[in-house]
Length: 455
Image 1 (tube, rainbow, N blue to C red):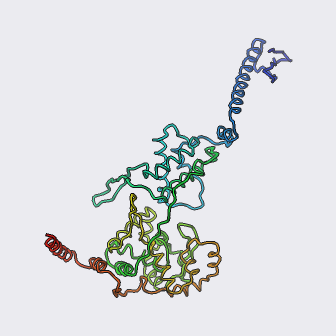
Image 2: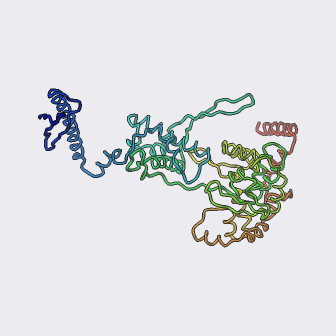
């Protein structure tokens, strides 16, 4: 190494391996200062050279392209380390095709938190998304299949007459295949949305196998059950009054619970006697003719804001399960069994307001309404050929067809007893119209008689 004075400035010049370096010795007025400056530059270049050699050695140790990409994914993608704890919140900042409801957002959060709890307990050393491997995901799915949710304890707030209390329970049941599939889908979605930001080359959830599952379809209400419902919704108790508009509208439109609760006045066209809106679940456009009886009913309702049923809308948008719970109580009170309990799992719903969609389709078919018209009204997702076929259904044809629906559905106030209405169902229905004192007297009388017979 050496320095030279050129004009009024000292210049350094040295060789390091196969590279030559030269430049001005900044702020150096003596040869001693220039030599010291040159030593500093040499030390920096040597440090850079040695670091580069170590990096080259690391690169050569990667035996495959996949290994190379995996080890240098952050450098290649420009991503950063994203912790599992912050992943879900960051994924929610990404755009989505459809805006999910608050209920769905909370449900997805619970799914992700369950996976997060599993990772913390089983693989505490893994904190970043890039460290998660397919084997970790498969082990989590295997746990779900065998044991159910990883987080067993559930706490919530419940409203009582004397205020709000904290309550809870333990999940001691297994999960349905569909639930496991949904949990895996949510986890995969989070990794997909953050793949570029986190420098994830291969989504660890991409090819994870989940158990097969079959859709549990809602069961249609029987004719005798429809009679019970039709009578009960016109009672003057709070629960019946709450359920009345839900069953009235569902019976003659085929709308879902969420679409009825969030129906707005500006989605009703009085001039054309149609309801125009997007289906809440799928975003599909729907054009639903308004039956004459439904039109008369809607015109009796007061307008208190944008929603047709403001109480239902507020409750549904806050927590949709509150609406479903009231419908379940209403039906169970009529003696209508709403759930089935598979072995080792919690009960699943088989009869609820969604069953009215099946009722609508069934009686529409009996009335001779073409299948294409029914499909266009209820907004089902159908195969391509069916969509093309239903595209030719005109609004006028729909309006004419919908009037064919039997008045039996809901609006007819007849109280004739069908021959096949069971004795137990009749007693259950009559119990709601009898005074409590009379019911108590009957109960005491028959309990004594039953105990005497057994004795």
